[in-house]
Length: 371
Image (cartoon, rainbow, N blue to C red):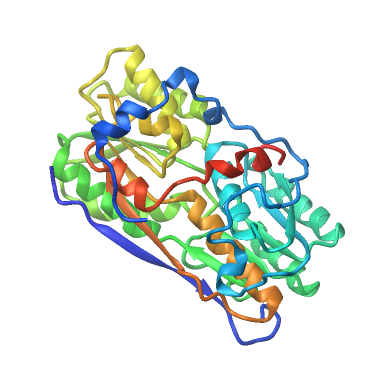
């Protein structure tokens, strides 16, 4: 096994203009012993519905790491909007992170999910603004649409936190804060891991959504890493973060290219379907690599059907974006930790990595289920 690298990426906040004014623990074996079975996983299918309201943040959840921990908006009142790109476990984990940041601040939240549609995204943001929200956290479906939405928010003095900033693009100055994930480096990490651990040959790549700004960056880094290595991408297609769509892409690709040696999917939600498909046909010779994490994906890491993932915490992106919004409302800058880590994980190190960087805060699942 090659040495795993941890890359620290930064949260980028815009300050000064007045407008936007646990230790490593556990082993993989102990984690597997306590892991839920795949059949028992209810969260992986998603539990969001368009236009629902989040309940008020109260004292039912833990108070640590709430918005008041950095003095950003403790004691404030008002409603924070949450706009999620679609309905899956990853999106719900981002919302759990927002709830963690709001806990103990006096702020409540209202949220929508956008069915991975740019048109729906813009319309939903407009509706949230019409409700009189004080701030907005967005997990974008489309980078260009989000830039337009951010302009509308700025016009109404509503600070926006971007929970997945690709590193460049329109409207950078209109965000109160950006959870910046270096996905070019993430693509390189996946490529380097494949070169060290997989057999060279044809590769199938299942992207998320082209236009979001996320998949394109992973593509860039992956292609740079694999160039001249003996690995060749023979199929590259967007799966819209849907397990059924991703499975269909892989099934069709393997019919056309039966000699495929590696599959790379850009989300756990898609890899879950792919891993189940590989298990169903008894295929253990293809190296399958994912990105991010959810409850079901971690169980697949204990099997021959998923070898590794480029891991980072979805929940932490929600925390960081929400803390930036709270700070902007208070006329300050968030002093909380603004770093998001990414690293390659396998069954050997997943328990320790999750212990230090949880991908979700399950205590807020009931609130996020109402989005």
